[in-house]
Length: 478
Image 1 (cartoon, rainbow, N blue to C red):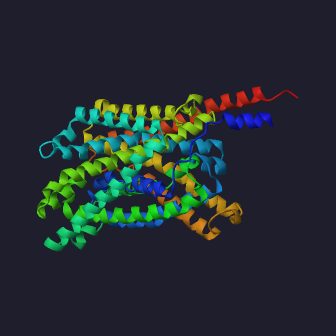
Image 2 (cartoon, rainbow, N blue to C red; image 1 turned 180 degrees about the vertical axis):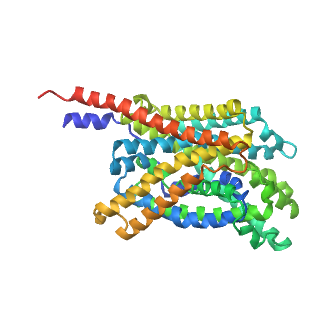
Image 3 (spheres, helix red, strand yellow; image 1 turned 30 degrees about the horizontal axis):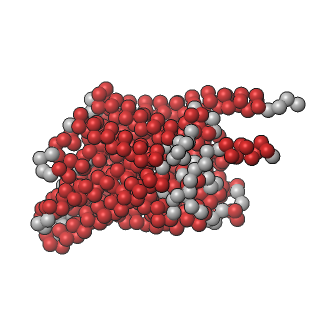
């Protein structure tokens, strides 16, 4: 008994600082990402139908999965913990690994998007800086450093940039949609039914479906920080519902507004949102609003980066505690009680990937954004294969009385989510319009996917053997 008490006391203790309001704002800032909208809207009105299909067949099942699995398996780790409990240790590690490594690609895209938007704060004439590789890299490094410091200081502090990001996202989307309504009422809508039809060559649109599914992930993020939520069984379901509804409405409204305001051929994947606001504001005589809007959107983007950096870093933290990765990744800061080692490693790898894209691949800023985003889509959706598969396995084998939903609901949500996720992964391998070399893109996508999955197997089996050896050495001889 004494050993059990000592072991429990020796485990790093995380602080429960996230209430329901914090979670709703976290979901909004994590799920509703304005940075993916321009790359989707650039493919035209048909993407609105893709949004509706994804909301019904992917987002709704995701909410059910988060609530059900969070209810059955509460605790720190989220997708890592769920796959581990349902499918075993290796699958749990692979799920968590993909969730973490996708964010190594995604966080840099957030940094690049921040650069593309923030230049509008300085007024006209500075927009070209967003295409300058040196400026983009320098600004990305500066923002990344700030976010790491805030998250190391702790969620008690770091959560406020998440909250400001959630508020900024909502205000920015509200302003975008509001301007769209005013322009539509005053000047009419210059978009027809033909814009919503499937194009003759749908190749570029196919990539959008995977990106849309990617844009709708995030409800599971709070469960990754399950040990830092106040009364999670009571708090989580309501927060998931409110965060999901708000995010869905904002996505469809903002996409329609972007299509109305800017020609699909003129939408920049980095600056499309500010382009739309600038165009509409000048038409109604409030051009002065562009700089404040860009500032608000920049804060929102910083919040997105903070939410995903801080949340996904909990995966290697838990894997370090489980001895499937170096044990020092499981270290908690002595003063702030945060997984500082995992946060620093995450930021360092993200920075390396940005430099590789700019220096070795020689991509433009917009093409680098799209490459990083597409690979992030594939890796991000792998944990959702496990998450929806877990729903099906639970519905088939486990007693439903111990869960939150009926067996029928679990079957429907699991089947729908699994099918949609598989399709989203497959379609991400179709290049977007910004890609200049299809061969280079496919090498990046296939090579990157195999590389990161291979690394997962390496860490699991190498450190798994060490874990087994330690366990055998600590077992007293009979």
